[in-house]
Length: 286
Image (cartoon, rainbow, N blue to C red; front, top):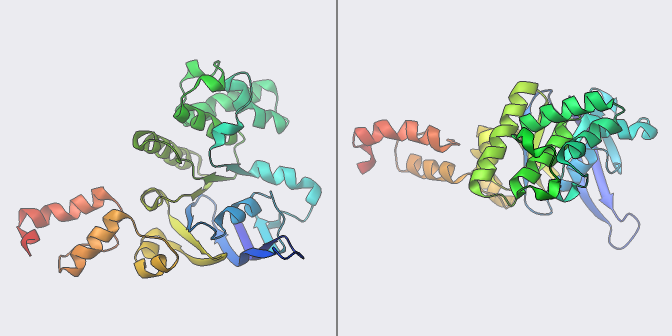
């Protein structure tokens, strides 16, 4: 479990540019949960995930990983980063090794694993992300954009973190590439049972993936609840500069028109299941 207690962070403390990016955030993320993190630009979500990963130290408050303050022993903060792995936005820019395999092996080897164990983990991680075996001996710079993204994600997965943080993993990908990557992330989560925190601007992606959603607004945790419950609060989301998924908005409008549909519908497939019987009965003529 990862937990925060009164977590706050200020940038440029003591200067005219001082700003509180995260304010008194207290949340609990259970082991094995898939959590979506959403918020308008400047809401504090990027600062929050850097805090969770130990990249920056809180101004005040605590981050507990399995009940232990991650900053209790500052010299061991590197170990925390192995346990809370983070895939940055556009991670393909971090590829640097001669081959894809060596790049994926880099993290496990830094953990002190043998070449043999690091290679095994790298090959398993590559399979999880859908990289074909024949790509592993190629230079990472020969890969397509989507393949580079999967290679970079595999590099973090290979370290087998307890918590995997993904910062906009589908940014810049075409619709097919996005769907493929999200399917692979879902498969990874289901098979490994690790905690996953997905940061995304796509309400549709978060709606189909997350068990719960954390909404950040002006540095505060405005909402943290089950996905359906969060997206049923359209007005609160609008105040935070966000929106519900397009299909949810349509179903809410149909519900207001008097149709017997769930206004908190999150996926097109679910909407189709509800609307087909109504269409067959001519109920849409209302």
